[in-house]
Amino acid sequence: MRPTGIFRSVRRRGRCKKVRSFPKNRSKIYRRIGIVGGLILLLSGCASSGYTWGWFAVSPSTTIGRRNLLFLIKGLIPTLSISAVSLSISVVLGLVVALLGLSKVPLLRGISRIWVEAFRSVPVLVMLLWSYYGLPITLGIDLDIFTAGVVALALCDSAFEAEIFRGGIQSIPRSQTEAANLIGCTPYQTLRFVILPQAVRHILPPLGNQLAYMLKISSLVSVIGLGELTRKANELTVIEYRPLEIYSVLIFEYLIVVLVVSHLVRRMEKRLAPNQQD
Image (cartoon, rainbow, N blue to C red; front, side):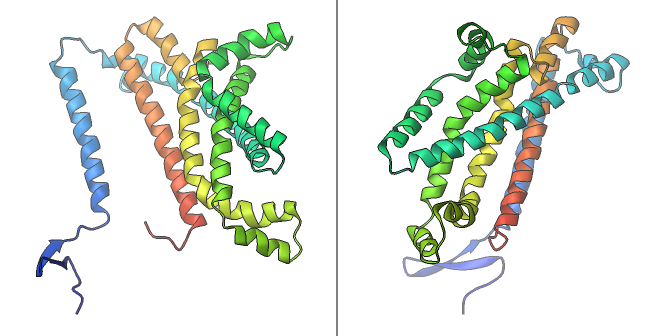
């Protein structure tokens, strides 16, 4: 009879050895303990160092702290806005480039490969600076800060999105396409109603990673003057002269935003795959 309960039998070298099986939620407990332990180590390091910490500058219990926290939070909307717009454009561009790469025409495949290799090789910060300062000179296009940031982030991220879509589409068995052809579906109908709905389940986790990545690299747009989270922290540091306290709050801001986004992506994964267990 197969053992059940908290112990299970494992046959090793002719003998049965009882091995303890841990509950599934034990990993979550360990994760929380690790986070709490890290915070304790951080606070203990703050207390033992020679630096005089001035948490009053960002403490919600003081008037100046509440004012500074509200100032920092004002950068949340620009961060979310530029990340969402840039990711939406990069997903569309990535899908188009991926379809070109899967084409039977060598010229289209070459265009796709050049696009991916070019924008995947250029640093995001360099593309931001070139979009904001270079486009007005070379093409006569005068872009505002937000638009220049969207152009740079979307172009650089589209190369990664193209590879994600290509891998997701190629993961679908060829028999699905053949079955769609047998029932008279056009290539467009096959892609829309057969291939992409199945590929979305495969590409959703990497798309969630790209969204978290986009939220983080949006901080680079502060270099050209967008008033997002990092820019607000830089401006407040010049006023209050408390860089460690302010940048510590900035870390927690990004941490909370990314954790919320990751949680929403996991919920979407479960809804798309209801029969799969954690």
